[in-house]
Image 1 (spheres, rainbow, N blue to C red):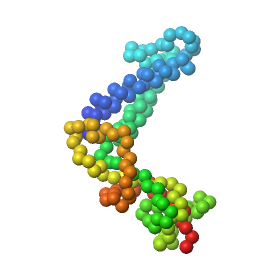
Image 2 (cartoon, rainbow, N blue to C red):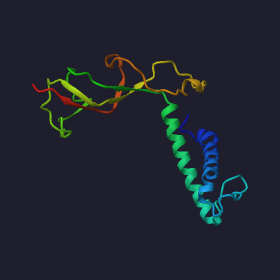
Image 3 (cartoon, rainbow, N blue to C red):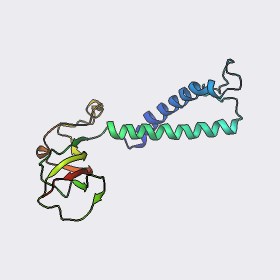
Image 4 (tube, rainbow, N blue to C red):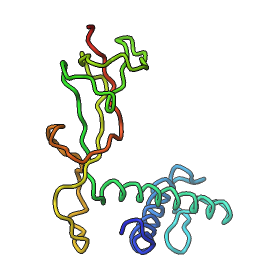
Length: 175
């Protein structure tokens, strides 16, 4: 749905063009040769900043691509069928080689498999998990996809179907 050509042409591209025009107008006073004069614009309001057509059209193309990519990233993170969960492991949690990387108290990473049976002393960086959304999804209703917060709060053990996106960084207690 959001990766399709229709969504891109109907929503992403027009919104990116509006943002490009607003951005060029907002920055126009900073690049104008005469700051108090009226800004030069093309037919749709894009501020040319007094540049020749080749330069401002290149700038416009570059900004359009930039804003399209930003909007696509936003759509991917907000309009999806996944929830995300950050997990900070409590002291005493048993080391899990699948979800944790180990470092010393000085910040040096420790590789190897000699950590079996040890427990977490401190969690330096949280793990991030991707979870299948539990509520029913109806593609006809964009409201279910358009969530402002895709992070959930629950016990790690409750998360049956999950994928580790970012491994936690922990310092292990001495044995």
